[in-house]
Length: 80
Image (cartoon, rainbow, N blue to C red; front, side, top):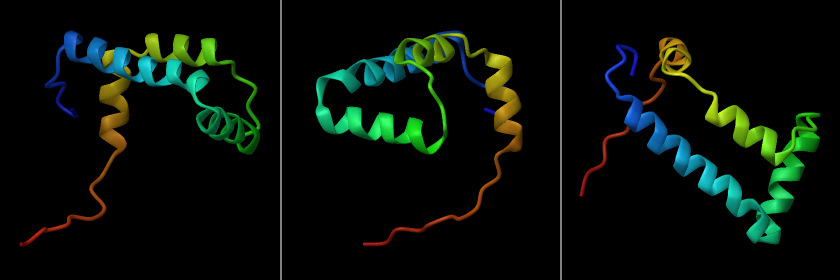
């Protein structure tokens, strides 16, 4: 991702998946509670519609910039 090795189609698919999960917030009471608790903890009053709009507006350049700041912290090896 740091090198931009992903397509606009992959970004759009990821956005659709995230927005689908956001749409499910209203489907279950537990999910609503978690969402609004997060809003309270972060002192945010962003609506679900604004949240979806922000996701939709993410660009490839923004993803690349964030990817540059991420570093591997731990590597786990799984054995049988």
